[in-house]
Image: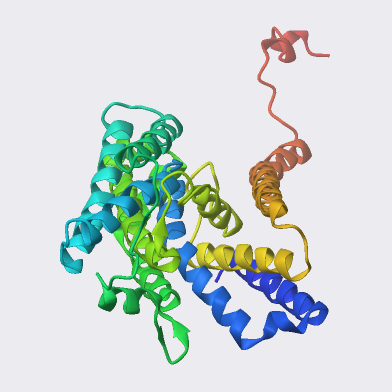
Length: 352
């Protein structure tokens, strides 16, 4: 655990303690389990967003991807009576394909990640609304996927399955990011893509796989959110969820410049974001301020990252100056050897 993660964990504990002191209902078992469920729901796709940000990119299409995959998933189960394992597989593959398309456009056609994913945000949402004629899709009173529903919205020993899934995925991605060559490649590409390419790393593959992983995690999150809401409105389902993911990643120490971040930090950032939103609700602050809170959190995170980067650059500059100072001081004390022709006598006989 680095300093950023330790500081974030302490901040999380302090805010939770203060909120609990203000309103003891915050620390009730029901509220804590509800928060754990929300942390699991939002944390799964925040992990994918974090990987993309580490490469120096960004994914603005997650919320719209949820809407498109969500209406397709519900339609497969209710209208076409597809067995839920096949419907689940179709949604997961759909997320992977959408992520691969974005990765292809970014790496092969050299388009900006912001533009590509912004277009995805518009295209996926528009396709979902057109596919459903802007109508809501739901399960009604049927039992099309009772087993999958119980898994997605169930619990083990009182702990929500969504939270357990988040922990499992965080452990897997933690090993991938922090204990594998691929993880080192991700950081290298985020720090300096051109230098990484010259060092022999296939940067296109590294960046594309980050978007593919993000799309796959979006497919998993789609299924979880569908069973959490039991319906999908293509105009509002998943709205602004990409901002939650970006805020969680930035809070967790992911630099928008790329090359920095950790899986533990993303999980802690997700937890802190949910605690802050729960704090807003418990203190009776209007829900309309949720987005203001989230925007403030992102702004503070970016400002903190900017200050840390500036401090790091100053420290590196001072370290370089300290390495050159002893040599310069030594030359001054011993007397520098004259290098100019004017400093030497023209002839030996000219000396007094």
